[in-house]
Image (cartoon, rainbow over all chains, first blue to last red; front, side, top):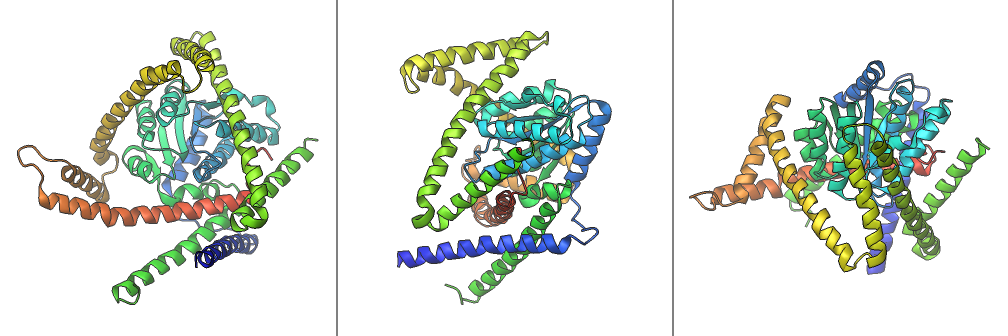
Length: 255
Length: 207
C-alpha cells in the first residue's frame, strides 16, 4: 500500500513539474509576437526602477541583499531572484560612479553574486568596473549577517536597499538601518514570519509570490514573463480547487 | 574561449540539475548519481564558505588600512577572526576553548541584538500608522494587540478567557489561511525559478 501511495505521489509530482514546464513554454512561444503584455501594477517595482535612475544621477550606490539561504535547499529560490535583481541593477547603473553592492550570509551566494556582477560587466564590455569586494559575505548566522550588513547601509552612500532572498525576522534591523540612513527599502522574502515584519518595517514590502515576479517587471526577458503567467494560471487553478474543496467539505461530501 | 566557457557552464549546470531532479522521481535509476552530485555540491559549498571568509577578511583589511572613522571595528574583526581560527584549529570545533569563545562572545552579542530587534519591532508598529495610513493597517495593529494581550496574563486581571478564545481563533484560522496562501505563492514562484534555471534561461553562474 505504501509503495502504491509513493508511486502515486511521484507520478503526481512529475505531472505537476511537466505541467509547469509546458505552461511556461506555451506562454513563451505564444507571447513572442505580442507587442506588450500588461502586468498588474506593483508599486515596489516602479520604485526600484526610479531609485536605480536616481542613484546613477546622484552618484549614490544601490545595496542588494541576497539573504542567507542555502542554495542546496528550498531557501535558495528567493536568492536567485535577488541575483536577477542584481543583474538588472548592475546593468542599469553600469555608468554610475558607485556600482551596486551586494551582501549575503552564505559562501555560495557570495561567489554567485561576484560571478553575476563580473558576467554583467563583461557583457557590457566594462569588466574593469568589477570589484570582488562589492559582493560581500557579512556573517553566517542570521543576526551576524544583519550586524555585518548594517554598516554597508550606513557607510557606503547607499540610496536604496533591495532585500531579495531568504531572511528571517532579523530583516527588521536592516530595514530600520535603511530608515535611519534615509534610504528606500524594497524587500521580499520567502519566510512567512519575515513577511509579517516587512509589512510593518519596509517602505515597499513584496508579499507572497510578488518577489518572484521581479524578473518580469524589471525586464529580464520573455521567459520571466512566461513563467509569471504560468504562476498566475496555476494560482487560479489552486484557488478554484481550494474553494471547491471547502464547499464539498461543507456539504459533507468530503471526509 | 570566452564564448565557449559560458556555454559549457550552462550545459554542465543544466545536465546536473536535470539528473538531480530525476533522482527524486526515479531513485532506483538516478539515486546514485544524485547522491554523488549532491555530495560534490556540499564539498564545493564548503570551499565557497572558505572563499567567503577570505572575502570578508579582504574587505575589512582594506577598511582597516583606510582613514575612515570606523576602521577600528575592522581591526577588531580581523584580530577576532585570526584569534578564533588559531584557537579552533588547536582546540577543535567542539573543544572547550572553542565553546568558551562561542558562549562568551557570540551568544551574548546575538542575544543583545535580539533585544534590540524587539525594540525595533515595537517602534515599527507604532510608526506604521503614519507610514501606511490605511484601514488594513488599523486591522493589522488591532490584530497584533489582541494576539499580544491574549498571549500573556494581564496585570490584576490574569488570563482573560474571551481574549484567549479570540487569539486562538486568529492564530488557527485567518493566520493559517493567509500563511498557506502566501506559501502556495512562494512554492509556485520557487518552481518557476527552478525551471528557468533548469532550462538554462537564468544563469546565475556566469553563463
